[in-house]
Image 1: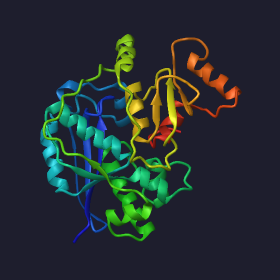
Image 2: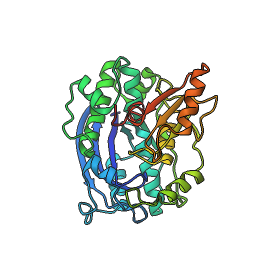
Image 3: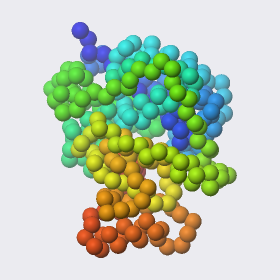
Image 4: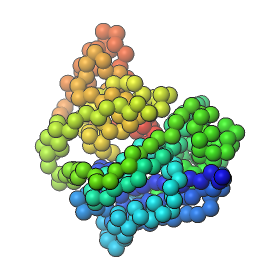
Length: 319
């Protein structure tokens, strides 16, 4: 029986996972790419705004997607293209989060979907690399990424990484590769009637700063994903954020830390392992930053890192 799977990559319009604005797909059969598809997407109405940060990353604007197909049509196409096979993505929990929230925003269900993460796989396969971001891994395997953050290019890159990892481990299927690398396939559980999700306020210079603080304060802390890669740099570590991040708001950063197996925390305590220092409107260091330095002076091991270093540890664009 043929080993068939589909590499996938989403781009989003803003910090909400459900704001899909582009998707790239590469269908692979027995280790060979056989079909490709990509399209822009008109994001679901509740999250249709484009943030300046996301536009700066992928270059897609609201005008570009004005006449693009809506999520419901694109989602049917994705399901037809994958034809029941597993999905593969670099930092797959993010892409599976896009599916989950875009379907919730539009009242659509989805079947159970098996998926594999080439970020986690790369950490197990090429441990000596300085980092395991998509361009770094592709450079190592000899695949040139010329348009990083274009959905079609990044889906192609994820497919090439998976194929290279199969060759490295001497396997011929996703199931065999997962066992050889000591990773199990992830699974997005089926949903028939999604619970509507609240859409965040737009992020940008005109956004109400107090509203973002209030929303962060009201957001429950996500739990660490038990299926995350144990060899990841944030797995099992308690991570606190200080100040504002340029790439995402705090709830999104907390979700990404939890997906990596970390424990997001609101405050610096004796259990804190990592403090991420962002920007802030005040002068000097924040109270969290000063508290972390005090704990370090007393012998506690706390990494104090920048936003770029956090992005790198998450396998995103960064240091």
